[in-house]
Amino acid sequence: MDNIQLHIREVLGFLTEQEILNQASLATACNQALHNGSREGSDFLGWVNLPSSITEEEIKDIEDAATVLRTRCEAVVVVGIGGSYLGARAVIDALSSSFDWLEERQSRKNPVILYAGNNIGEDYLYELMDWLKDKEFGIINISKSGTTTEPAIAFRLLKEQLESKVGKEEARQRIVAITDATKGALRSLATIEGYKTFVIPDNVGGRYSVLTPVGLLPIAVAGIDISKLVQGAVEIEKATAPNVSFDYNLPAIYAVIRNLLYKQGKKIEILVNYHPKLHFLAEWWKQLYGESEGKDNVGIFPAAVDFTTDLHSMGQWIQEGERSIFETVISVKKPTHTVQIPYDESDLDGLNYLNGKRVDEVNKMAELGTRIAHVDGKVPNLLIELPELSERYIGQLIYFFEKACGISGYILGINPFNQPGVEAYKKNMFALLEKPGYEEATKAIKQRI
Ligand code: PA5
Image 1 (tube, rainbow, N blue to C red):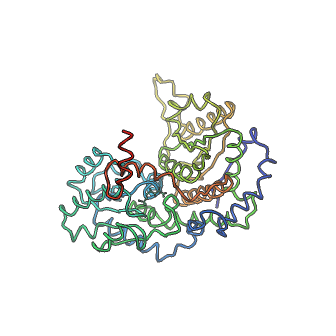
Image 2: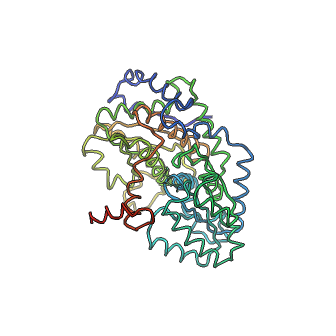
Image 3: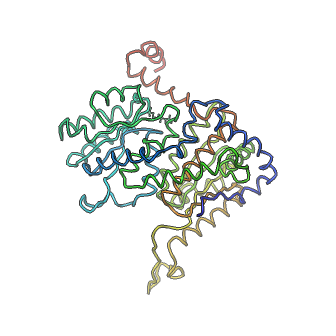
């Protein structure tokens, strides 16, 4: 069976094949370092062999917990931020029907999945809680540290709402906590309350955690086959093992090309999709690459657009703005459904030349035409092709991007597994909110405002 493919032809006007091949030993050494833990960040490499180490018992435990939530709840709120939410949302959006959530409760197959704790929007929380008032809902609370402010606020509110609606005992059955094995406020709370819990392994960072219960539980609640998702990831784990030669190691080739383009001044990578369901896949990718590579004053800026939607907003910039960008297009070969453009007697819209064609054929020509235009406009273009949107190929894509990110970070010369910069805003926010323990910082920041 086909795997996802990487097509590099449209970068070859910007780089030679030889330049790419010259990086083979460096990329292979970086891949090996991910497997033998010989470089920086080696305590966060649990994701490298994670797919193949997931056992049937673990899958069953997750599916059983999902069944409890699916049986008791018409809506499940996933509380988490960053790596504790984006992966689940990326997969759920990619593989669910776009309009299922609008269905009446009795005709819906799966609970509605909602998200909270990924912002501090008062109106958002008010409106969410208002909508939940007459709904049977449950909560998956996800935080590795167990102390992140955004999800902690959301969980405090939702827990209180749920308990006063259904009582403490029933609420306990509808709350699952996913956190560190021993540390953090969420672990303590879960122990005291007796929630069902799952562990985020110590050696897997938030943005690499989608194939742990962090992603797998919400994805299973949404009715998606997590075994197939994991199986897809296993396939690319195997296809990128340390003994696989560079020519066949697609994430390594992608990592090399993006670094060569970066050296040429292509400082921004735009991840492009032509499929509205992939919007959050790009959000997940942005976090993965942004948090992994943007440090020590280097790093490609990861941006994303949804085409053809954004061709009508960002298309001009991409075609003719500063030539500091390259594109990576995610293309889905075969849509899941068939819709043909009908014949119209009056043809007032002039569309009869498309009579009988599938909507996807128009989309594909938009994709091809745009790629050619962008390459002509000096935007190097990589293409990742998925045979279809399915659990297996999304699983492959997840591991492809994770592996490429690790290799790319090592090529760049940074530690792709830390994120020291994310603490700066938190320190200021806590100082401004006069959090106990931040007295000195509060004094200092008050002099600046
Ligand atoms: O990738 C990361 O480490 C971050 O995005 C975290 O996942 C995010 O900040 C949430 O942290 P936590 O899971 O500790 O609440």
